[in-house]
Each structure stands twice: as C-alpha cells, then as structure tokens.
Image: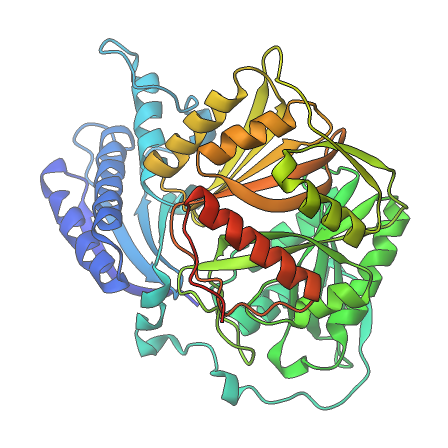
Length: 502
C-alpha cells in the first residue's frame, strides 16, 4: 500500500513554486532515484504547478495547491491537487513537435504537457468534482532501493510469515466480475508491488478487459470463495493466437496443482474461441512454470534475454540478475500447424529447422532475395520496463535504415535497455534483413509461430545492458540447447555478452 510520506501546501503564486522543486528532490533522494530521474521529476512537478497556477485560477484568485508524495516499493508518485477552474484534460490538443514562436496557447500548452509526460513514467488527471482536480506523476524506483520504504506501511508479510492454507477443494473456472479485486490481492501477496503488469492492480481494468475479450481470465477459488490463483489469455488485438500470462498463485495455496488446473482450463477456452495456438513466456528464475508448459504440450521456440524487469518472488527465489529478467518462449498449437516456408540466412538454418522439429511442424528454409519497394514497421515502447518491440509488417528497401533509426532513438533517447525485433519469415526479404539487423547488433532469439498476419516471425533482440545467463533455471534439454545458441549469437554480434555457463 502506498504511503503519504508528506504533504506540502503552497499558495498559487509562481514566486513560491521553487519550494516544490526542492521538496521533490528530497523525496526522490529518499526513494533512491538516479540523478537524471530526480531532475526529470522535479522539473515535471514544477512545470505542472506553474501551468496550473496560470490556467486554473483567475487573476488575483487566491487558493492553495497541495503536493503529496506517495511511496511504494516500486514507485514514487507525486500528487498535485488544486480546486480551481474545472479542466478536461481530454480537450488539450495532441502532443507534438515544439510550437512555433507565434503558436496559439492551446498548441503551446499541448507541447508542455507532452514534455511532462515524457519526463515521468506515468501521468494522469483525476477529476474529484467539487473537490477539484488531481494530477498524479509517477516515477519507477530502482529495484535495489525497493526495500527502503519506511516501516510504517505495515508492509507485505515476509515469506516465512505466510501461513499455509488448510488442505481443501478448489474450483477452477472463468472469473466473475466481483472476484477481480481478489485477483489484485493475490498478485500483491505473491509479488508485492513488483509485478510488471500494472493492470493487475486495478480490479476495474481486469473486469473491463474481460468484458472486451482482450483478457480471458480463469481463477482458482478456495472453499471460502476467496481467489487463490489467476491465469489468463491475453488478446490485445483479438487475433488468431493468444498469450497465456498473468499467472499467479497466492503463497498460502501453492504446490497444490492449481497452476496446472488453470492452464488446462485456459486451453479449453482457447479451443472454444477457435484460436490457432497459445504462446507463453515463463520466467527463468525457477523451472516450475516451464514444466507446466511442457506437461500441457507447449514447446520451446525462443529465448528473450533481459527483456523484463526483475521480479521479486516469494517462497520461490530471486532472479539472478538484479536488473533484467530472461523469459523463455513456448507455443502450443491448438490446431495442427501447416507446413511453413521461411526465408532465413544460411547460418541460422540448422537451428530454425531444430525449432520447427521441436514444435512438431515441417519447414522449408529458403535463402530469399533482396527486398523491393518500401516497407512498413510498427513499434511500441513500455517506458517503465525499458522494453521496446519493433514489428516489421512489410520488408522494403528502406526497412534496414528504419530499424536502425528506431533502435537509436529507443536506446539513445528513450532509454530502452532491450529491443525485440520481429521479421515476417514468409517474405523473401527476411533473410537479407536479418543479416543487416545482426550487423547493427541484433541477435537471434527464436521463432514466433503465427505472430505475423501471413505466418511466423523470426525474433531478434538487442541489449543495451549486459545480462547474466549463467545461472538461469531451464527445464527442457532443448531449452538449454537454444539458450546456448542464443548466448553464442549474442557474443557473435557483440551485444551484452553473458558470463560463461558453468
């Protein structure tokens, strides 16, 4: 639970707003933020306060601003509260390029709010009606400083303090709306505030995503009606495949086969929805979730080094690297796969054939040809997790330079520590594009079955930080073979080489 560490009340006067900057700097130091993050947050708070003073009050109107600081193990949040002129943030024009000197005030204000959003990890307004407006600016804390939360919070029970639930019968079924808050509570009990999917801490979001079909949640419920576990199919685009994730069992109910039962229920839901397959990205801090995938027919097809923030596991163990987690990629076909024709460089052909054999499908590898025409690349960036994904939709003569520019912007400007790159293997230009990307520091990560509109993708990745893969827990023999290959490719292109495996 977040703590309100301190509150600062200031008059809505520009001359006193420098106090807000000093206040935020001290709080950022307490939260263990890096100097750059401290500067960015302090600037964002002061700039937001100046904008509120200028636009929320009539000239000469006197009213206080309240600045409150909340601290959790994962983030520092600054809440700016004011009771001025009602304001609809949705009506501010879209953020864009810097305004011209003679730009109209709405355009200039939009640019300012764009800068404020870029300075923090999360920013949003809350309308409290007659109580005024609240702006919340959130900055993620480094993992190594998470324990520094003052003890007054009451905290999360240490693993040894969590009593085991009595042996009982559990029901495994689809989530009911009133159980969503129970899912959030299970996530908290299992991970504290370290879970990287923020939606799981908001019960209303869980309900909404299930209503739209973007999330298909199943739960394990104990005899008292309390949620003991959660597992879901994630379908953000409602496409032909889904990712199974958000898998968690409360510490008091572990080692009772609940994960296996929920996974079986999800496979049934996938069949009912007519999906082609389900992918899963289990962690490598422990082999349990990988074993579950193997038992239910999932097969390894990829390794993603350092793509996710480190997680704090209770009663299981810690990720071996303090900054980044490594995930395996598993895929389970719900319909027999069609023979695949893929275009890959000669040096990857043997491993690609090995991956398809492990998946139970047949493949014909072709060398491909130089791309023609112009390409199309889409991208996304999870700023809090410093993870970017670039998906090539159409390979063209400009795609190599487009990927390079995007990678430079994401790593050099936005601060991405890991970039995933997906190349459509059905397109003949994939082989040449793979070699060009490898010359730019991307390295082999595996195959994504059915990830593209017209078939499978080749997954490459780029690391801006070193990742230690030497003590990862890998369950399957082929998973170990694939990790060794990815390690060797990482070394070959010279990106973030992990220490040698024992």
